[in-house]
Amino acid sequence: METDFELILAEYGGRQKVFQRGDVIYSSESGVEGIYYLRSGKIRIDNSRVKSKKEVLVWLLSSGSFFGISSYYNGYNSCAYITTVVSEKAEMILISREEFIHLLKANKEVRNYIINLLYRRLDYIEKRKLYSSRISLKKKVSDSLIFLSPAHCPPESALEGKPYKINIALSELATMINAQRKELVLLIDDLINKKILDRDGEGITIRNVEKLMLLE
Image (cartoon, rainbow, N blue to C red; front, side, top):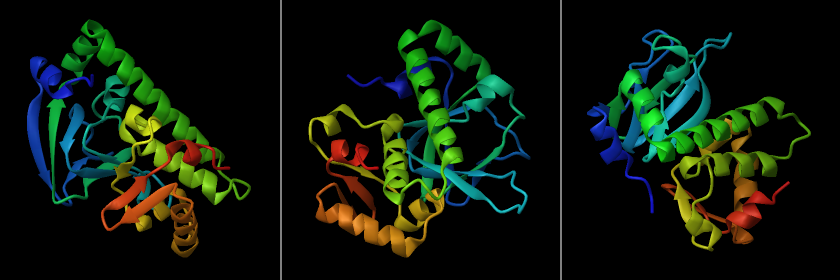
């Protein structure tokens, strides 16, 4: 049974907030107000501290995701990212740092969930740092699509053979893994022919997650 995060966060003073497309939720200039839980919508997180001053896509998050957790460790004003709404609107629950700490102390299930979530994010970031020309495009796509899955890992239903969708455009995925879009399209089409993936205008569907995870 899935954890009802909305109900739990409400018990600890979580309040609902709504943002519109293009709104900046937080940045290195404004700092982080607290910890967010994305109820619906889609946001992108970019590295806003690069020499070129251009935003570099770190990852995308869809409904059911926590973000801003770095404020738990570093305080409200320590933030290396800029977080922007890319869907028509995004509905979320905001919980204060203090209440989030109380929640983690009181609820072992949520605490373990957050620890695993942070571990998967750090693991993916370290993988991306090690990417080089020797790492195949297949491996980059596999790592990134698994990371973009709910809670950064395949849902149990996927391991039972049921497909699930990730709301990411090919252009976004290409930016995320620093790949040429034309090259990425050819690879995705090949994986579609092998019945590993499928895609439409709304995103990429993972049809066979076990085969996807074995790509090298």
